[in-house]
Length: 319
Image 1: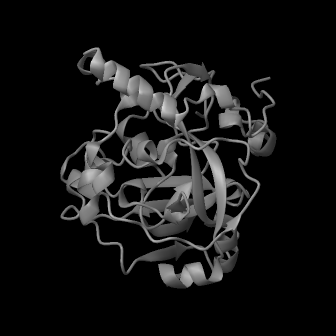
Image 2: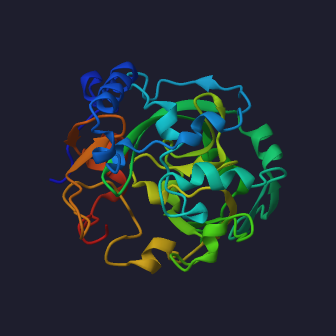
């Protein structure tokens, strides 16, 4: 069987470098003149703009038991080491370029086979969906990972309010398309607007969140403000940011990365250590802030909760 039974707390405390130790290592490296030689290592890249980022509003939310035994990755890494191609292809670009994004007012347009389509103001959505905090493991297809305390609400609750029809088998999500605010959209690296999708039963799973915050505060723009998707058992590119549209459709939608590189990025994007990316292994991962690698867990460690969604699905073929 492909499924390895793991618990949400499988990241051991000693597998994550304590921030004080990390700083000591950096200071030692500086003094010994080695920093320049290793500064290109992706797991250690931290933008100097972190201290200049604007203060985020504190949120009111309920703490949950999700990931209570996990130690979150340092906020400086979470907010400066990002994939958000709308603001550039380097990891450090979004923390700088995204600050000009206008996130107020914000709305999500709902289309397709639902009883209650329309344009929903984010403020109204949040009034009906109380926020809660969940600490989730986050895994990127590039073989790095983080532990992030997200603040948001269950996507399933919002879906129920929309009342999907019988033909709604999938949900297609779209990011804002505005090349003037998002200069990365002027390039042809991807097909814009950024598009992703989930099966309706995946979207209804209780682990799936619509996140509006991290570390108890409103989500920074480089992390997908003002609202993004969080599906903890899938690779990061599936977790679409700055959402402005949801379409309930009968046919499986094509995602932006599927269109760009279909042999490298599939629709499902489930974390599966037995299916390598054509250019690197997925069997091991580096926790950002750590100097060591660890084995990748099936479904990112959430196999007990989500494996039943894929009964009878060939996860090597449908990657």
